[in-house]
Amino acid sequence: MVRFPLRTWRAASAVARTYNLRPFRVLLEEATLYRKYGLDYHAYHHYRLYEPGRSLEAKGRYLPYGGSRSNSLWTLLNPPRYWSLYDNKLIFNRFFAALGLPLARILAVYDQRSAHMADGYSSGTVEQLAGRLAKVGADGFVVKPVQGIQGHRILVFAGPANDAAGMFETLAGERYDAAGIIAFAADTAELVAQNPGADPHGFLVEERVRPHPELAAFIGPTLCTVRFQTLIARDGSPRILAAVFKLQPGTSGVDHLLHGAVGCWVDVNTGTLGRGRTRVNDEYTTTIPGTDRSFVGYRLPAWEEARLLALEAAAAFPWARSIGWDIGISDRGPVLIEGNERWSTSLIQLPAPEGLFTGELKAVVDQLKGCAS
Image 1 (cartoon, one colour):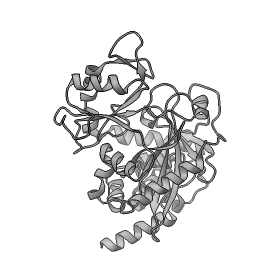
Image 2 (cartoon, helix red, strand yellow):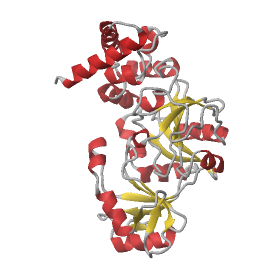
Image 3 (spheres, helix red, strand yellow):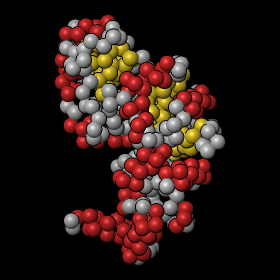
Image 4 (cartoon, one colour):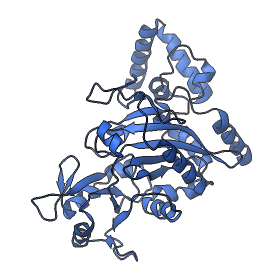
């Protein structure tokens, strides 16, 4: 009980020293933003709302950092009856692939409870999975939970190990056979904690989508995706509200801010990267982690195609009004990786020059609230 007020006071004191203010003035603004706009301590500091030069109204345009207020927003924009289309990656893949959109091919489905799906590639035993991987694993593959979240329990494999039959190597050089993959996926504590109510059993084996050669040369072998935040406007047309590139150097294979990625602001019109933010530091960053190379000004390849794919995906199911799409710019063009109906307000706003809750988004939310009342 004592730690949170102490942390709040210390953070307010640090801001006050930086900007030559009194700590109580900082605390008063925090309290006002919370009372008037629902922006809590985390939003105040992570969105750098203490920076001078912006009005209280401008600061109030930031969406809440999480919690019940974010849940209310997601439920209003994307009714829970539609969530399974995005939560369940098998359903997601089959629906959007059937529309002709580019997605990663599903190579196998593993679930020990249902190994006899009418698809020819499901497995429910170690032996069945091992046999399937022997057929499809030569070019690498990705293992991910069917109802995963926040990049937990994902493995990205480069291909088979050269000196051990049935063994496969991840991008980072870790080795797993079928039994090891099943054991890795069985550790579902993070999934259960972060996605209550989701089925933690079962995982997919998907083809490994490789990054565009320009991005591979610039960043590395991990497929870094663009988070496009879309909105079905009041006139029924799809729009892009904002875009953030999740820059993940190294060989982790997972481009999530919780796993060390940098969220870089993207100019929606040109695909040019602006400055970025991470989860571990409130300061802006402009260089690829571990290097002195700046990413600011870098123009993402195939940008117009990626932008159009986001709009096409949004229009495919307009009853979900606002989805956060992860689109990988690959060696074969943009690929739709996943859609998030409970999208991260912080990811899309951390590097943003201003809050997202304005213009058409606010108008849509106000309209939906009016219909619900």
